[in-house]
Length: 145
Image 1 (cartoon, rainbow, N blue to C red):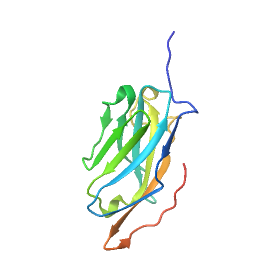
Image 2 (image 1 turned 180 degrees about the horizontal axis):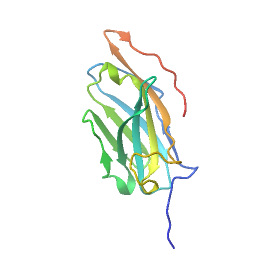
Image 3 (image 1 turned 180 degrees about the vertical axis):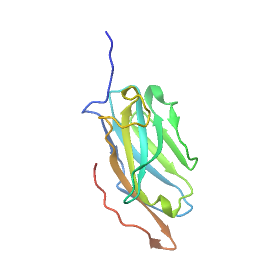
């Protein structure tokens, strides 16, 4: 008998904070918790600027895939556990002001590591506000996708 575990309706990922504020040049940490029956989950992070398509930041495996990752920009770091994922953005700039998404997918659920599937359900994570000289640079509403 062959079993192919996929993410199910009971699997979910949830942001810990709704909003994070920091200062240019500093770092910020974003957190999501998740629950899945999969032994091979991949945790994704995306950044979304208004009127643009979401941008892939990174993915990192968890559980039996904890050594699997793609992090193209060294300003980003990620750690995962069996129930959470963390994104650290270092050396913040004004362009980091955005809406961030965390997403969960089973590794065996795709042929293309970044391709979207029916189980891909990003959660709207948080607005990151970058302050320069005491001025807030953007307003944005939090919502779920």
